[in-house]
Amino acid sequence: MSVASEELEKLAAKVATEAIQLDRQGLKALAIPKYQRATEILLKLCSLHPDAQQNKVYRDYAEQYRRRAKELRGYAEPLGGEVSGDDKTGFDNLVLREKPDVKWEDIVGLEDAKKAIRDSITYPFKRPDLFPLGWPRGILLFGPPGCGKTLLAAATAREINAAFYCVDATSIMSKWLGESEKNVAKLFETARLVSENDQPAIIFMDEVDSLVGVRSEEVGGEIRMRNQFMKEMDSVIDKNKKLYVYVIGATNKPWSLDEPFLRRFQKRIYIPLPDAHSRRSILELYSKKLFKMRADVDFDYLAKNTDGYSGSDLYDIIQAVHSKIIREFFESGKPDDINAKPREITMQDFIEILKERKSSVSQEILGHYEKWFTKFKAL
Image (cartoon, rainbow, N blue to C red; front, side):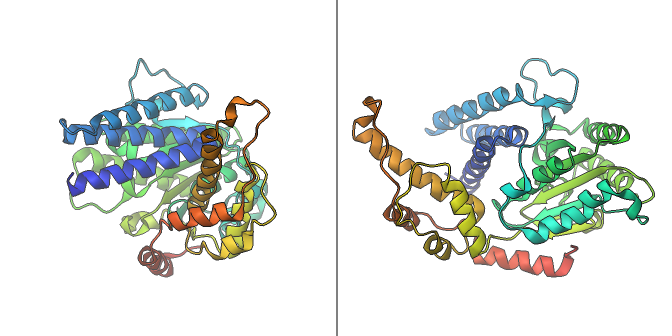
């Protein structure tokens, strides 16, 4: 397998994992574009090496993700219009509106980020008369993957009862060329119409660097789309207008953003890895959903020994412990007994899993985030 194929395989696994986690948290509109993106990457892998043995596995997973995205789309609320058959190029198939079921208390830590968001969105919406100079409407959330950027955007929408438009910027780049500027204009027009009816609107763009990142070469469609996006952003952030339309962009690669776009994100908020206190709270939060735990499970020890782990990494640890217990239960032959239950989770279970799972974020990449934040921070 070539280096490029290995990178695509890793990317597909990463995106699919994010989709599954969002799906399990009930965030359907956020999970759909991730499933679609994972499907696209896997099919791309198949096209690069049509005779490869692993293609059957790739296609099977791609079909599973495609079906799950289609199933979830039946529950999500589209923005109007019909998409015929399996057409995946229309505006309505890329943008979804859903009431996020995420509350502030569901997000552990990140107090600085919550404060900055409340200052920019919550307070101006509740008392616009107290903000004669206007308020920020472009917010960039950046940091390592799996640290809560998506959840923050969803919780913000819930707190002010906003229409939440979830857009996958990677899908925009791959699917909207040809009709790109029209669809970007339609997205912002739809959000403004909602705002004119006294309901705030949040446009959440994941992987925004794929849309407004630095590029050495661009085709005409990309240039037109980026220019349209810049134009629409300027109209939204105009402080003379009392619009309740906000653009929240999320990225794991802020250094890839084109600098002219940075000023359109008036707030640039670093979403770091969780500290020890937050790690303990996250582990406890996820563990509450599992079976009974023995009293010897020491969350202080676990928090201390997961330094450098993201929230997503901690979720994976809990999930792996749970899978270990379930596997033992099924291998014991007890599932046939309707009264049988899996055994308690012990500290030893966690210790064994920790030996096998390391942080997904390197110290080198953390240094890049800190350096960029020092240069461009805007809280």
